[in-house]
Image 1 (cartoon, rainbow, N blue to C red):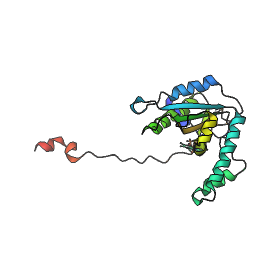
Image 2 (spheres, rainbow, N blue to C red):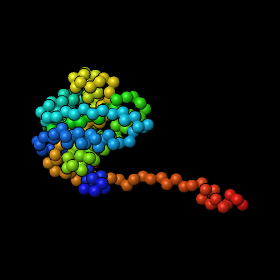
Image 3 (tube, rainbow, N blue to C red):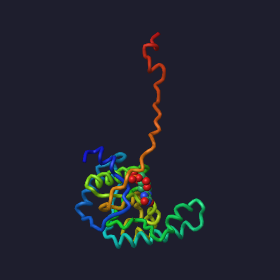
Image 4 (tube, helix red, strand yellow):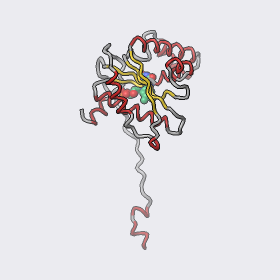
Length: 199
Ligand SMILES: Cc1cc2nc3c(=O)[nH]c(=O)nc-3n(C[C@H](O)[C@H](O)[C@H](O)COP(=O)(O)O)c2cc1C
């Protein structure tokens, strides 16, 4: 695939086969992730990898229960609650692998750096025929001190991007994009006609 195909054909994948993903495949994706630019080249990221569909399903259930309890009756969360209340809905879509992109520091731009690393990882996965989906829903539960302790992650690290990974049952169609809103900033009059300045 050429680069623009990878870019255009990456999709959020929510149905995976049961095929496992092995460590070298994931290491290759992480190596692509760390090619991302970062503010002052601080490279403030770390990665955690969970393998095994059953284990990931278990985390999905716990995260969902926690979210449902914490949303309580808040009207702003009604849509999310409705989704979570569906007994068939599972946060990690039965994926065989879950990669967490973690910000190691609270540097002002560490989160942006991690988002760039996450996008690199998702594009590299697409290039290898693997599907991904960023699961923002799971972030609050993953960032609980007790969850980080259980996973063996340093408490000061912040989970920025939980990304499930696996072989897609099918590649979803794109939902399309709205045209970009672009402001072409016009140069000031004098810059447009420098000769006018001389008159
Ligand atoms: C920050 C972020 C959080 C997301 N959280 C979720 C999520 O919790 N669950 C989910 O199914 N998809 C999630 N997605 C995937 C988006 O829904 C998806 O990227 C979007 O609908 C566009 O579809 P596409 O990626 O196939 O182009 C998230 C994506 C991003 C960038």
